[in-house]
Length: 219
Image 1 (tube, rainbow, N blue to C red):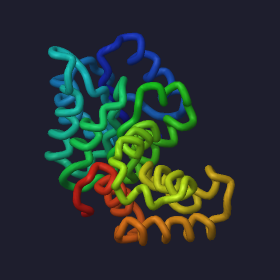
Image 2 (image 1 turned 180 degrees about the vertical axis):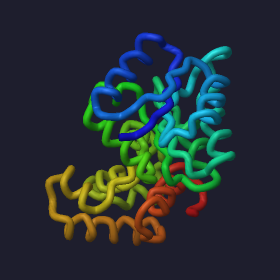
Image 3 (image 1 turned 30 degrees about the vertical axis):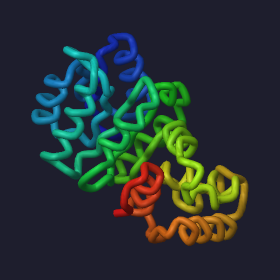
């Protein structure tokens, strides 16, 4: 059971998430509707993880995201899962730039409707993993210039790359692609060789992939 704090300005969605999380065996110790209330709740309750919307009152811009970044600046070990209505790669980049990405996640709100995937993502974030919505990864992959090294990858390798960027290990990638783990290892080795990336495991591997996709330096 996770002790969770939820920040979502939509009363209906907030109530639905509380019901979903409670029914799944977790405890929502605070459910709030704005960023200042989120900060106060975290300071008072010390949760196992935070789930927050990006846009909240008063300006409905990126108050939730900024609150998440501030909370992580105070406590880098606090797991935070950020929810967004739309694919905004700038938000994802801002969230994962600087500091450790362990225990950070960025999902589209549509993913909440896929209950098992949403709960799996939340539990992986709470466990210290890095989770990024597959649609965000798809957009990042599709908006690369023609001369980008990603052009060297085969379609199969691009599929493996997207799953790696979501934070899945080799075993999980194999299960999702219905191939052997040995095949994943082979594809991953080829990807890192073609992109000149350090084939490190875990969150560092995710960050290396993200850095390449957004055109930055590998960590």
